[in-house]
View 1 (cartoon, each protein chain N blue to C red):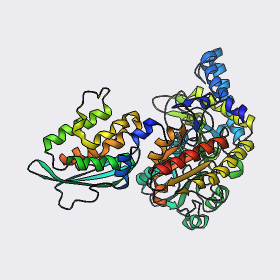
View 2 (view 1 turned 180 degrees about the vertical axis):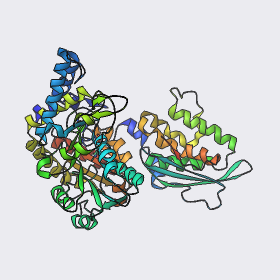
View 3 (view 1 turned 90 degrees about the vertical axis):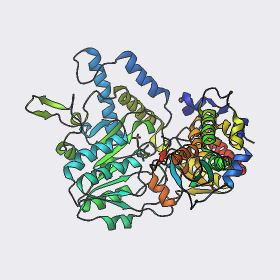
Length: 401
Length: 152
Ligand SMILES: Cc1ncc(COP(=O)(O)O)c(C=O)c1O
């Protein structure tokens, strides 16, 4: 583990004179040198636009860019690189599906199901679509532990259900949803399934072919990669029949003032110069994860989560929120009536970075009747000693209030 | 227990007002009121004023939020009760400058009474809005702005 930590320069800094304990990985992870180097190498050595020039640098840039697409395809086991669309991130990917597939296929009276624990980015685009089309947004509930209630979800499915938009792992509660069952049941009633994989891809092996999901969106920056880059996986049959997202360069086959014909996927959905360095960085992040081993990452994080879940019980007045059986990486809690921002400010001065607030999941706050949550979230480079620092600091907070 | 600067932020006085806020609850006879919201923290405050003869005859607040926002509202209501509107504007100005101006050494912070304890918040840029929310909401109430104030 020491070796892994040393690859992350940011982790060795002091914050207010104390060693940084970075436990806000669900917001964004730190980046290993290999990712930063890959991006620097692009800018220093083969910076050029992709898919355009016929000169040497453009050719090199295109090769690296497309190599990253191949890596993503293998990483999530898609059947073809044509199913891998580069986006700005999860939010962008979900909005892409809502504005293309959604606009094309949702009519008045149709139903869209989301869960009660979605991130705002998997609620608002569907709400906007439903408003535009006169469709209905249905919410699949969760229980007091934060577990997905499959039977209640099944009961919502009907012939009018056209889209099921569901998270793979909840960013607020850490809950892992029974995705395979959800997808099977949704398909059985003719709905497509859009998966928010932002919190899953960093922590577990994802196989979109085995899941049989229709769309799967995730962000590079939560999986040791750069910000501003993400992936939308879509089944080829949908991508081919969907209208384009944005118009512009790279997404066309031919343009005249009378008529434009569109390129095939994925180019059809990648108008404009993409985040080339970001995509190359994402490729390097996948290399990093595969080098460490996705199974090992999951093992280390689960071990930390177990350890931390027990350790925080020593903090007087602390209540864990999100205690489902199947969880990944996330430990959320409240402490007496202390507002999470007060807790976070106090921890910050101990060098401990956690997230405090509504976590972009206000319906989760409403479900558990709290104004906000504290969230510690783990990555492969975290240690039990860091958990101990967190617990000690929380005990101090508990004494102050 | 914690370092000095964090103790500056979470002083006894602030913790006390957080645990036992003064002037908390609706003011039924209010003739001015406004609601403020800090989307970052989710702090929510409503200020009720009874103004008579250009003077704050009574002031109360409700809402929920972090210790900084709640204690700030509590101390503000203590300090402003009985003050003239001209005094209120002057005090608001000093409070605002204390937390946001680069150089606050020339301010007459005695005018703030207890609320001067918030000078330490300046070391915590992310939390300045928590301390100023109640004050901005107060100004909105005075101006009868019915749209909820937000710190963003
Ligand atoms: C579950 C979940 N979905 C979606 C997002 C949005 O990701 P991004 O901000 O990278 O688009 C996040 C992260 O913020 C998340 O945790």
